[in-house]
Length: 397
Image (cartoon, rainbow, N blue to C red; front, side, top):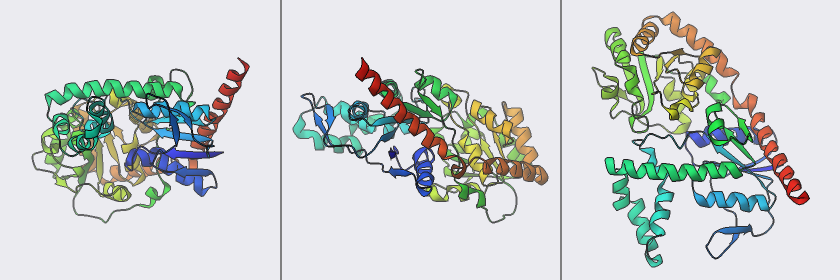
């Protein structure tokens, strides 16, 4: 079986969901190729929609991550008619993204371009592209507050529609959590593949520093309202124990959202390869998430990353965080009092930090791609079996 894997980007989502399992499988001898480019030569009908592949496909299974746009949905049918099984990979509920999430303009630029190009003269396509992609009027609108939030809702509905249609057509859907399976694969052709970590994370250490560092990784721009759920509890624990607070990522808005008395230290964004080492600088990590449909479908990746690099964490009790906590990773805080209590406990008691960090790292050692990448291969093989069964059923009809 030959599998072509197409991550949606070079970010953490692409890394954890496709690039890492494909790398491990290839190292183990599986025939897997990974490329972000989704290029399949097709013939087109009069409405410029693809109808057939040109030439014989050189792969048995194609994995598409986050097919949010119509053309990828069209491609699924083209590939299937050529005998290629298609897997759709999803790691977020795109129908429940917060309207103030700054990721919307970036995630949907292609859709925004489709809208503009469908209503403007063909000869001006390049000018439209520049105006849209490089700070032009639509890009400005996309980042301008209330008007954009209404526009984002339209895009969310339409992109989620294309995604759900792609999932309906797919031979198999792979997701991170049971909530996403219910959302995107009610037909039952689904494999729940929880996020894992690369084995190399387990050997990451950080140089010792004076004092205790409480830390968070991310940006408020893509976590609207999440830090607010601490209700000042983290801030009080930090202030009263004399700990420092550090952000790996974008520090804008963190002090206000958490209610910190002192501005946090901001390490800034780091290359993805350096992310685990940056997290390892924390003595205590926090993973606050608001109780929303989007977050209830999220995986416990942040907790698992911290556990792998030896950092004890305090996290919100979303379903997947609860799953990991029951395995021995981190502590859960459902209200401001518990955020303050658990962060304070871990800051003040080095033994508690070491105990929780040790348990977490032990759990993480059993949740690596090196140990479980075969689950991805089994899922892709199931997709191929499903495609062949569908072809036989169609031939017999």
